[in-house]
Length: 472
Length: 105
Image (tube, rainbow over all chains, first blue to last red):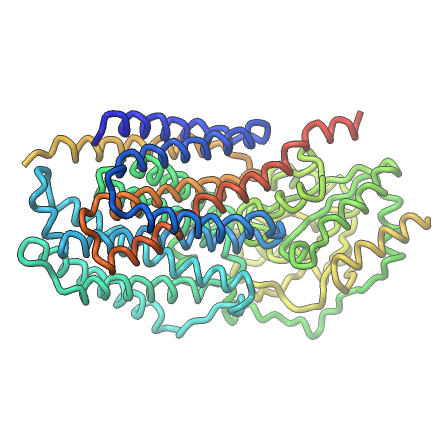
């Protein structure tokens, strides 16, 4: 490799690291992202220098143009409520690229036999390529399914084949490994038949589909984060195979940081990554969850009553959830908060780490509506405040407020850290209907002595409350 | 066989893993979405791999050309889309600290 190319790669990954550290604080985040993007441009130019003698310029330029034309409009226009599925989709195409790279290498080197003429070790390169093929294909198809679930092309609740799910996944996984081993052995002789490489991609792809299908909507933050980490790892593997340090560094950083993020999400749900991927209650709801809602009565309220309660409060906490995203109520909430603040009432936002459909989903939505960054509180910071709070408004959040997680050892979510909304003097729950959340778990909060329900579309309900407040 | 180059790459791989852990460990929840979206854009670096595979093939066959074409399109979408959407998200956070102090003081 040219010295210039190598040097530019070093500059590029230094910029990635610098940019990524910028992303860890709100003030430096915009600059951090720009530095990382500039680093990408440097790495890109370096690669073009590396392949300057290629005969394929036409294809390369055409592909780049098509990629830019396809990539920019959705990124520009997507509503903030739809960001999780877009990230899933971008992640998927990244994984797809890795799988295709491995396939291209397989073809170009006649089943990896061509690698033997190189002076370095061959087996590790073949293994890295095969790893990239399996994980890349899995990540691509898994992300596509995640996208379709979030976009509601597929139903959000889990789709599984029941008890056969685990054996099926295990067979698919082993099958793709066997096919990979056959291709690997083939590379030491005359090269395996292309069908075996196809088998790797197909079996790993099906595995991606069958792994994500049974995972419920509530577990999506963990899944998207995990798929992101996997694509990073596969990129690093592809980088090893191609002896490309920029890919190794960037891929591995994403793989490591993605793993941490996934772990944080899983911890916030008090579950292991393994149990989530194995398809737990994330939408399943074991039999125990079917509580006796029949003999419990939830008190319903009106916008006018809710407004009066709010008007005489000293402190109000808003608890947003996925329902807020669905109803796109973030601006309405901000308007209501403005009216409340004008009356001297303190408004805070309690944000559970896994509220919404991707990590930090609620923060992005509220930020879009111009909610002050300081007013958004993380769970540990706000949980002590509920007892000092007059009114808590729960908007489209369910499982993250479920007191059963603290009190009922039989509840499937027992032990999951939740927001202690029941400690506040009164709770107003904005909800479309009495149906249970994505996890399908009964929420005793709705029947609590201090709880009233305001049924209807969250955006309309909030707007009505705001009108009533103004009229007071 | 000469393992020096490969082992150097493995060393880089391991160190990068530690950097990834170190950098991310102290991120506030607020920035989880932009962070994920940002790292998502960074793994779009795979587009380089697609360029290298096609660009270093002396006489690329038609299947390789088709596969590489799709791979470059996918990789470009990942990179460009990822950075643009992250930038949009972060722009919304940017004004926050000043706006809040204005509001409260």
